[in-house]
Image 1 (cartoon, helix red, strand yellow):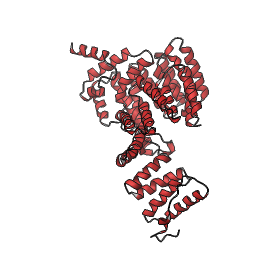
Image 2: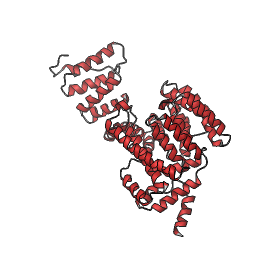
Image 3: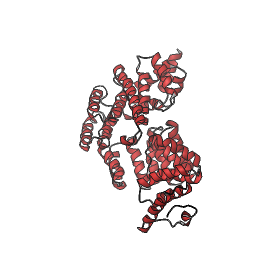
Image 4: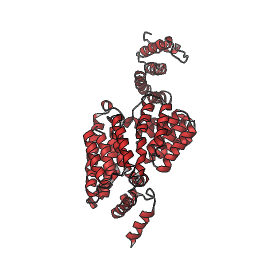
Length: 437
């Protein structure tokens, strides 16, 4: 009777109200299996319904190392059920993407690539097992496509997609992950995206919730206009057209980013908040709101959203970056540097981040050796930035490193060529050293 009541409670609770990790930690494996089974049976029809199952699975997408042992216990206790295999697949998939990081493969360490391949193999093994036990679990197919995308396996992606369509042809998450894998960003072509959109338009006659994919080409074009061409107005036109076919978190979140770049902050907030109405745990929208409040000097509110994103994933590069910037503005240099140190493990250091890190090291930590290294990177990334050369010069001067003269000459040469140099007194740079200026 107790188990029956618990099952009813799970079925009537919101997908995110049950603490899956607590059940896992206390080894209540049967209860956890029943809960996920209940959510699966209740939420398998339509985009929003599938999303609730996704919300129930989200807690397993974490970098918490202790979860590995917890999952092993669950797998050992119930090896022939789909639930522990799906949870393990999600966990290892998350670690694979985190290990891969955002850098180009040529700039990613061999250790990271090795870890990515190891986690990817584990994830694929568990997710494949799920498709055998319960082939109607669209999330397993979607995650397998997502992992195949990591190695640009176009033929394998198509094979997985065709297999999945036999069991879950109306699945939103399946089609979303497949469409993403076919975009130019991941080695596909716009012709493929357009063909996919036409197929979804036909499919929407049977499953109306798939009509939203008719706008997918405009979503892709909006992202290209924003990322590659810096044409925010054209990007906004495209994303509005995409949204005319229906709302998705991806569409709304991209609209929020575009509007933030256009400094239409109140409209951006509406887009982000609508995204969070669809999924309160959608990390990109939380990060987007943190950036929006940072740009409007509302640092406390920005910090609140950055912390929410990091509560979901403590090693999120996007959330670590914005929180570091917020901490810097709030005059909390040690916390800013701590976040930047974590960020460098998986994120891509930009020119502006190197400058921020260098500034904190130079002025707050008086670590001139590290500051010199960081400003050297910044100067190489953007050779026409007079500030990077100036602080590289100053860092080397404090170290009594005569190479400061080379940096000084680059700085002076830039200013003489008409660069918008901030007026600076360089008389100090010719004092107390034996270096030939």
